[in-house]
Structures are given as structure tokens and as C-alpha cells.
Amino acid sequence: MIQKQMLKKAQGISINVIVIAALALLVLVVLAMIFTGKLGGWTKAQNECSSNGGMCVGDASQCTGENAQVMSRYTCPNAGEVCCLTLEGVQEPTFETA
Image (tube, rainbow, N blue to C red):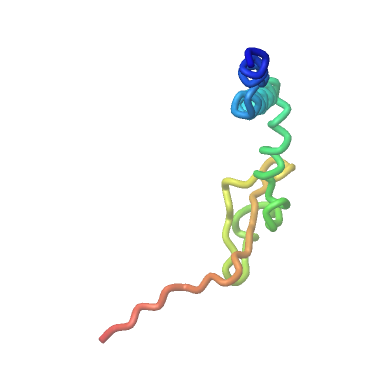
């Protein structure tokens, strides 16, 4: 009888502890990547003009066409160029007068 009670108490590490330890390890890995600069390549690619469907042009006056806009938040590889992005499905607002 005493042995059965001992076996029930000695079940090892619970699943909750394992899950929490795995999440903590994942957080530590992400923090290490941020602080060592390994995550910087991914963020840089997300800010590139070509990655977002845009085209780099010499200056803003060359960004012409229907719904074409200069997107200053996206970067171009050459200095002095701007990102020109054509926004599809964008319609100019119309104001009706009564």
C-alpha cells in the first residue's frame, strides 16, 4: 500500500512545466537573434521597394501612371532613387453635390 502511494506522487515533470520551459526557450532564442543582429536581414528585406511590388525610379517626377504613388517608407538600393508603387484597386473619392 505504501509503495502505491509513493508511485503516484513520483510522476516526474508535469506537462505544464515542459510547455512553459519550451516557451521560455523560444523567447530567449528570439531575443538572442534580435540582439545579435540576425533578425535584421528579414526586416531589411521587408522594407525594400522591390519586395513590396514597387519600382525604383530616379526621382518623384518619374512616378507617373494611374494610382502611382511615391512610397517613402520603402528603400531603394541606389542613393537618390525613390520607390514608385502602383496601388491597384484604389479609386479616387467622388463627391456628389446635391
